[in-house]
Image (cartoon, rainbow, N blue to C red; front, side, top):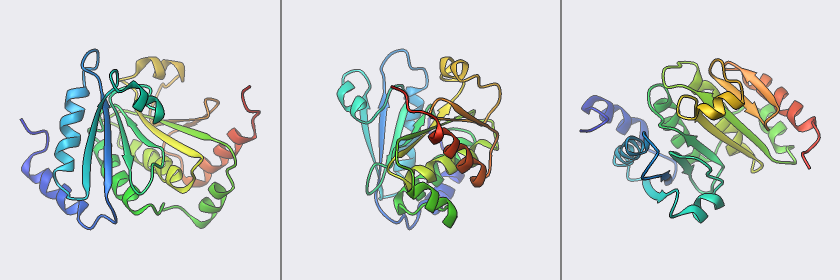
Length: 218
């Protein structure tokens, strides 16, 4: 059974018209111990079928472990959205519910390679001189989460030193516990700095600078 009904397929087709460039949807799943891997694969394949600019590349997290490690993939289901280059944009967990919107807008952003950020934001990210890891914890029923996810992904597109993950909290409860995710969205920057809610760009940049000001781990 299709995951997208006729109306949704038509809407997505229109949304994906005129993508600025080709996008690879690189999917990692696992045969066992991954309840939503089959559904994630089906969803990604159904979306890709709606645009000739989209292609799906599927890998097994176990048998293709070297490929996964090379792309920094450490859990499944995982989806990397790759355009002219790999900007470090990742989805961990099925991008369903409100996160389906995040997936579509991220595809369009990666296709263009032009982050929709303020001039001040672009300048701040151009000055980033060491790695930044943004993890945005979400749930499919959270209407505010896509804003946080898309902002993080835009920042990853803007800087080669920034990578951003959407993490579906209920699929990775051990991570939700580790980072004390009591509500979503919750953004974790470099393991140490946290942001509650869908914060605006200036606040996220302020927190990013705070994370960069902390001593690097040995």
